[in-house]
Image (cartoon, rainbow, N blue to C red; front, side, top):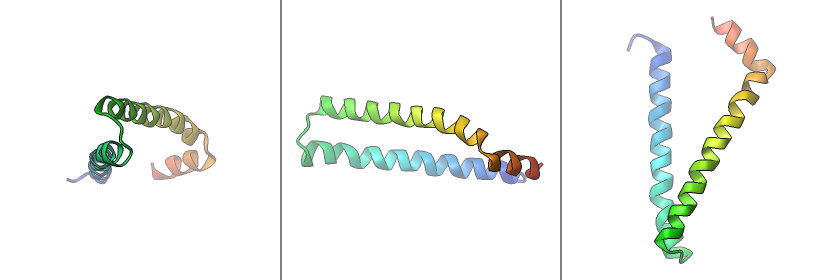
Length: 78
């Protein structure tokens, strides 16, 4: 791993996917056992969770690009 940016990207992906797996692993038993939802409802909740994460990423990316610090930090790192 000679390139530091590639290593940071890989670590970010591993932590992100691990976090998503952990949320899904704990959310389904929480919904079924604690809240009493049926399995078909948990599928809907997980789908809504995924849609919310996708929309959050689509909204946060352009907002971050417009931030003054984003332009300054990107320009300084080159």
